[in-house]
Image (tube, rainbow over all chains, first blue to last red; front, side, top):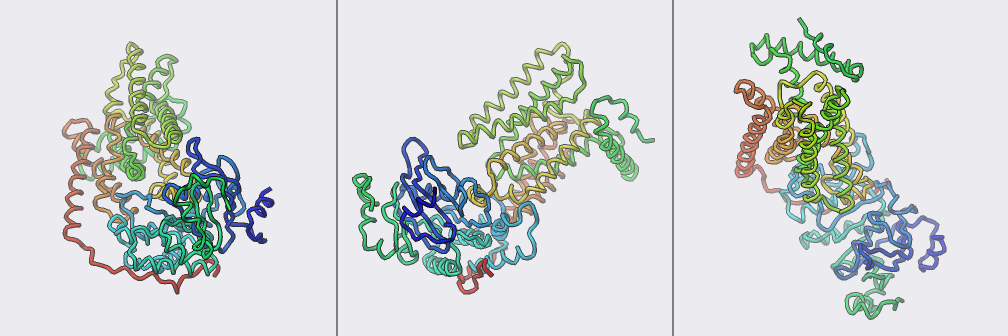
Length: 260
Length: 336
């Protein structure tokens, strides 16, 4: 059933299982749908950005993809399994916009990054190899000097780096980032996007939810423009030339049903 | 010289199950008698004090262990709510015993009732998407109301002072109740040891934990059930009203002076043990209620840690460190 819909969604069908596969997804917290009629397929190795105005359902769409929410209608699949039943957390890395983390808890940067290894070890203990991976992740984000600092004493940008390191330590196949550079200094932002590029070249699928459009147009190879429905889905270059942005961010209501 | 025969005077359907634990208690008593001889401390000469100290030591480990996870989820008050439902459980036990002429330990019925209440709170919070203090307050008052009603109905047959349950009592820790506590202790410490990573992840960052494949609601249920067990276990000497303090106060103290999570777990246990032992000692010689004294000592320790924490931060051992640059060349992908 999903195969037919994949063809209909207009992307190149490849032999590999799509990382994310949504078909005709509708979801609302109340009777009013927050996202509607979403069909989207992300293949392994893609670098996709989801953009849209505030309240356009970006984060909700992300939760649907990751299985944190179950669609009211339609199907959401993650690595070929229904998203809400997908439980191989080791394949997913997640960096939130504002760390939902406890503000007062005594915990060091290293302990946070170690959490990235938890899905790999289950009820077991972290091995020497796990700790090595944690150290490498700390090095990669330039936080090795902060490994034993308490997270509550870090600046917003430093804290965000710690969470990125946690996602890296997870060695995920899919990295989902929800406005990851909020509060990060401009200099590091650039380095951070370079890092994402490198990871993507290494084969990791990247899904970036962004408000900062300049970052998106420079980095991602594919853009999905969202405002309750998908207004645009295609290569970044086409997105820049199209009027999708104005439509999605502007008078959205008048264009309901007018999809390209 | 040993008084293990005292155990034989107890008669309960659970005796065969608890036999190895009674043996352990006997062993513990021997150690305490030896310690009494070595130190000449008067309070170590009584067997009921041996049990009280053992129960106290166990509380000093399990309460902050669970409390650490609760406090950092802003669930400090759930212990209080569950303690009051545990009181209802005690009342149910006393009631059943009186009506059916059984001799089930009220602590066993308290375990059952508190666990049910814990699940109820959790399910309500899942349905309403938030731990709300209104529902917790309702559960708390319902538990206490049910408890006091049952006890008053049965007042004729139940000359048992409920003070023992409200305020705790060192001298009423029977061998059976001590054995029940040892079982609770084993279950709690074992469960936390097994699921520490998962509990930490869920406590620190619920969304990321959910993404990583953990069933957040399942671990929350485990957490509240363990809380119910701790509360019932600690109730014997802490009493219903003060039991929640042991979940919260040592943890709050440890948070002031610890840097890492594992350190804070360890420090909170040390602080709790200190409060328990000092509290029992002071209560014995001062002829006061142990629960109250233990909490007062714990709060005093908390105040000291606040001052210590502030001093350490003011002196400041944090030499400025530069953030390293984000490096892109040594990224190793998982394909290696």
